[in-house]
Image 1 (cartoon, rainbow, N blue to C red):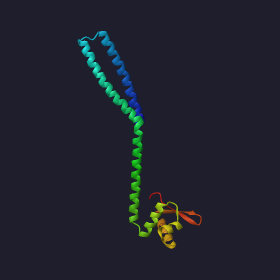
Image 2 (cartoon, one colour; image 1 turned 90 degrees about the horizontal axis):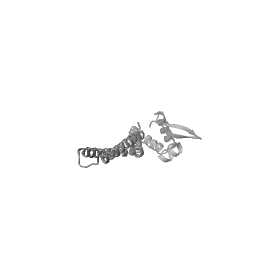
Image 3 (tube, rainbow, N blue to C red; image 1 turned 90 degrees about the vertical axis):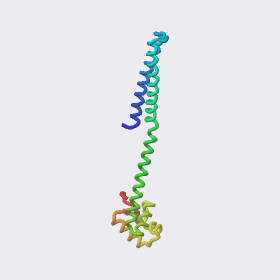
Length: 167
């Protein structure tokens, strides 16, 4: 059950208990009037019942406040948890990418970092960004494609290069 539903349930229970306690207090007040409430045994019993009822109102107030919290404010916690989960996934991806880079030579690292920085980069732009020769970029890109790290998609006379989705 999500927090919003739980909040509505708790809020409903709190309101029902408040109504019951309100009816109970009004009946005690009627009993006080009927008894005349001079110091007697009946008055002491009514007074102790009223103090228990007041304590119950405090508990019910807490239940109602909890219900309001769950209905209206727990959404921000859910957003925060989703954000933390997304940050965790991002860090995990970055850690995997850093480990992957350790297994590559310096040219492959340069090219892969440039591709990660600019998805869909062309080989010509890649050559300029990495400061490698046209032949070296072509060789490294072919090698990375064979290793299954990148994919090339034809874009006019050249190719747009993307990281594979699992990286």
